[in-house]
Length: 347
Ligand code: 1HN
Image 1 (cartoon, rainbow, N blue to C red):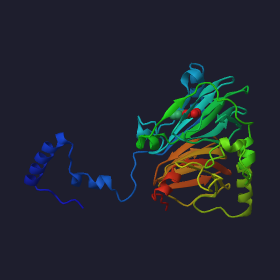
Image 2: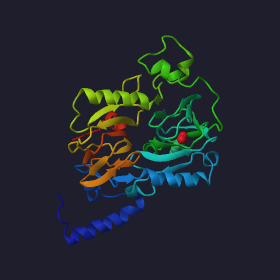
Image 3: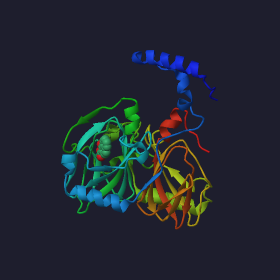
């Protein structure tokens, strides 16, 4: 509770502050309540992006600048409450990337971790440390911290995916490093090699060609065909969770934990007509509508949901999801990081 300051005291304090300011000294008691809030507060807002219009701008950019020239041809999904930060939540970044037939996005690596979630197109690839993941709609592909990656499109149609990165997190720690190789990484393995060795509850018994992959993070491709089948089977065999619907988290087979140290990802299925109970969580979350339609009520404000729409829900906002037809969502957040730091809460 703020104690009122008498005018004489206020004048004396202001004079003190003015003297201290040139020495970069400030009174905590003037800002304490704004620093340590009883509940999370963020300038980030809930926002929905219509995929069709974002796609149209991206294709127009595609006619003006090459992937090679741009390094990465991406439209940033910037949270309107975080203008100028390139952030979609306080800790995360999102963008829509286009690779046209015949193009290559040159090889580089950085300390930012990334995921790709395919929005449209089929047959283009991301190569991670020289192994290609050939991508289909709604596949999840990872490029963890410091792994070389390039993208190419040998198919006949444009390929668009969502990039999710921990750029604001790495910026917060002032820990960004990047290197450029250019062109494409020399091939190190056939496409699918890592998935065969690590993606089926197996791992190489002895050292193998797959030892090129980091032991702590071997798997980087989670195909739609696989996660969708699992989610469908789950939905047929039990009642949906009241807060989440049916939900499956993508995991790192090396430790059973989230896919990357800073980013968690999961998928949800809400049966036709199902509505979740209101839920809040400290991890601001980016959603992609994979199938179906419905609406999201974020702090009571409705956002309609149609296939490929994108929605960001800020930390501690109250979320109710209502499925019209059976609704399938992909989501990513910084829950992985918050759990390690002992910060994650939900209600
Ligand atoms: C990046 O490396 C990619 O590899 C996409 O496709 C978006 C945004 C900022 C920094 C690096 C990519 C990125 C990025």
